[in-house]
Image (cartoon, rainbow, N blue to C red; front, top):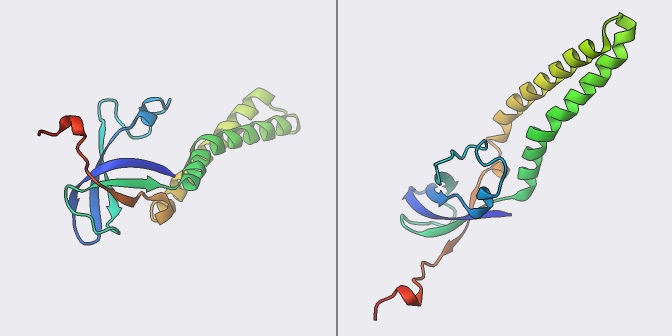
Length: 153
């Protein structure tokens, strides 16, 4: 499970808005600038179901299951490449029968399949965005402890 610490900024009986700060895991990621986290945007507000009855100002841990994230990673990064290769192989196999340059037909069909992959992903996205498995959730409340070195005596 992927977890992140945050602070509840707004709450209603069913929903909580949690402000999180981009973690160290994001800093080492090669796609941190293209996954929706802008270069200078270190804070995010995430909407989650208020299953723990949190209040404004509570420190919480939000989570996201790993299995759905792996599926999304496959769908976005691997699936289009697989279709590109399949299209190129089909184009190369059809070229002799159609008496067309194999490279040209491979490229044309490969890129067509590549485009179809993104069309499929776009259609699939609508259903996945409604599925709770792909949404963050509250894991637990955190106690806000002030370190001894910061307290006044």
